Amino acid sequence: MKVTKSDGIFIIRIDKEDSVIDELIRFGRENGVKSGIIAGIGAVLNPVISYFDVHEKKYVTKEFEGEYELLSCNGNFSIKDGEVFPHLHVVLGSRNFSTIGGHLNSCRVSGAGEFFVKPLSEITIERQYNDDVGLFIWNL
Ligand code: ZN
Image 1: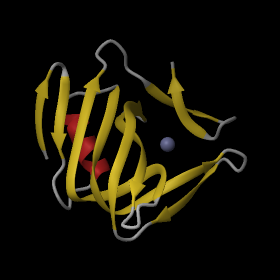
Image 2: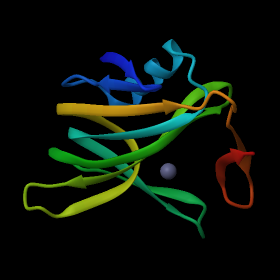
Image 3: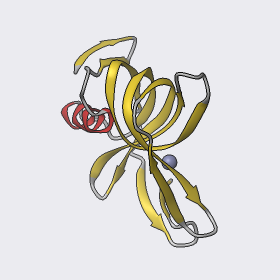
Image 4: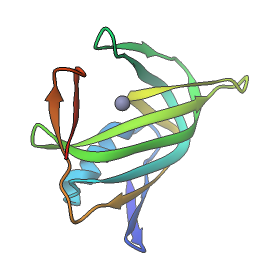
């Protein structure tokens, strides 16, 4: 991972074979990020993504083997159980130009991992479990 900064925005290169989630957690810890905006593109390997069934209150999770374009990664940093937590959703493109998407559980960079993070300095967004929803949602 290589990190630089301009205009109050971190510019992060996550390197080939590295885990996107693990590297963003490491970035957040090392830079004291508690809340912020995440945006990224690139190419990833073996993504594991989920769909949250709001009626069942549980995730349906699937691993997709192979390489995918990371067409859009949109998310945020918050604090969950006292730890910095990147919450990421992705749209992934396959070789036949079809797309899949969902809540990102894990993936590794297969080519490029290009991310921007805009930290929010005036707020700490904490997550709290909401029994009605069945998720850790923002406690604002
Ligand atoms: Zn999600």
